[in-house]
Each structure stands twice: as structure tokens, then as C-alpha cells.
Image (cartoon, rainbow, N blue to C red; front, side):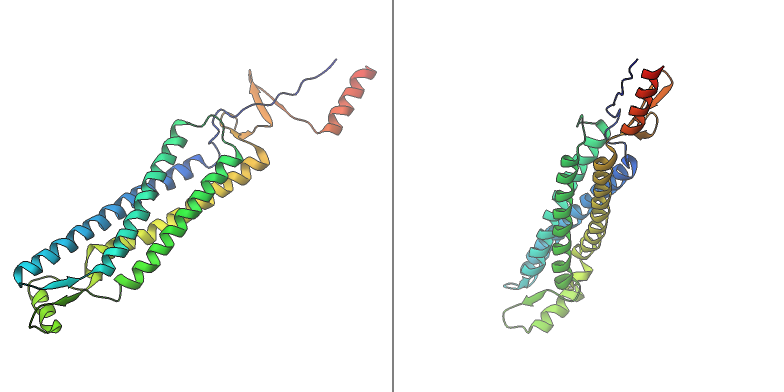
Length: 235
């Protein structure tokens, strides 16, 4: 008499931490979209202010190249994150990958780590420029202080922290945090898959268990299997 030990493939390869991952990826993607929109709107507003100043004071210029550069950097970081997290949420939700392996998870870990670094670098550089600094202004025959007073009198502000760029910066910092959380969840999933394999959502256990016809059979240690076989042979 012999016994056969069967292994199973998970009914849902994304079962381990599926909902926490799906929720944080969705939040991260939504925040990235908001950051992208705020950054893009900041660029639009800056160009509009430059044109308005030149129209109001002939020959006047607004020096904002530094905030344009960091805002473009934040737009790129948030845009990449928005696209990736949206794609990742769809993969988990619709089970596009038939089998989740440790290799695929580690690829995601690497991508998320790169995204987190991209967010961190862009946020630090933007913080150095946006929080303490203001735009410069020039007009022929007028001192800069007077030009700035005229701009303030029109209801505009030359301080970067009063612009959409500052709002985008806040969201980018939050996106950095959610990206780090996403990386941690992916790392935990990688460790789980490496140790236990995909989780069976029907019975809530690892692949070492199987439910068939209401009967759950488990893999036994080798020594115990040999003892059972010896007992069977003696019978």
C-alpha cells in the first residue's frame, strides 16, 4: 500500500497581503496623479506669470528657471510612479501573472526602490529651492525691490511656497512615504513566497496543504513518511 503526496498551485498567487498591497498601490497611484497634476499646473502658472509681467511692464522679466527645473523633476517622478502603480494594481486585481515567483517580486522590489530614490532626490532638491526661495524680477530702469512690490500689489506672490509647486512638493513627500510602504509590502511578499510558496485562498494556508472534497491532506516530514511506510509493510 502506497501513499501519494500532492502539491497544489495557489488559486490566487497574489493572496499574501493582497489587499494591503492593492490598497497602498492604489493610494500611491492616486497621490502620484495628484502630484503630477499640481506640478504641471505650477509650470502653466509660472509661464502665465512671466507673460503677464512682460505685458504689464514692458521689458520686465521673471527669473524662475530654478523652480521650473525642480517642478519638472517632480512631474517626471510622480508621472512614472502613477503609471507603474496603476499597472501593478491591475496586475494584482486581475491576476495577469499566472504564477507569482520570487523573481518577479524582486523585480518589483527593485523598481519600487528606484522609484523611492527618485521621489526622495526630487523632493529634497525641490525642498531646497521651493521652501526658502523666491522668484527674481527685472525691469529696465527699475530696481528689483520695486518690481517685486508691484508684483505683490497685483495680488501675485514671488515666493515659491505660495505657488502650486509647494503643494506638489507636499504630495511628492507623501508619495515617497507610500512608495516606501509599497516596497516593504513587496519585500514581505518576496520573503513569504520564498519560504512558503503561494498561499491558497480557499483554506488560507501555504501550498503544502490542499483541500479536495472537504478533506485536507498535508505534506509529512520524510522521517514520518518512512515510519508510516514501514508500518504499512509490516501490516
